Length: 88
Image (cartoon, rainbow, N blue to C red):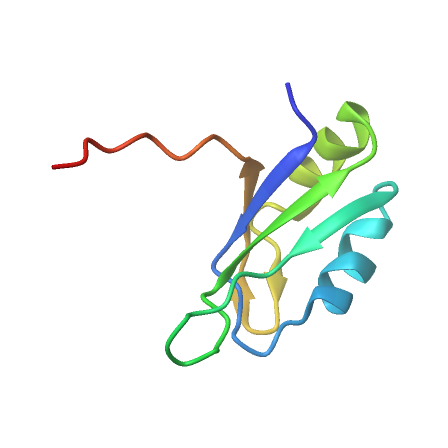
């Protein structure tokens, strides 16, 4: 299992600092990434969090998946690589 988590269903007002603070109660956060839309520069409603250990990643999933944060129920799970698409 890897230590990188996908966090979905985020409110657009959530910042990387908010996420670091939220996840830090489960262990050390080594990185937080909040992708933004290229055209609007607005957050896309999901993030990637990397924890320092597998145990802290598992604890964060257990503690935060389904939790209401900023008016939305979070979806937290292990990040999986994006499937490759065939190019024409």
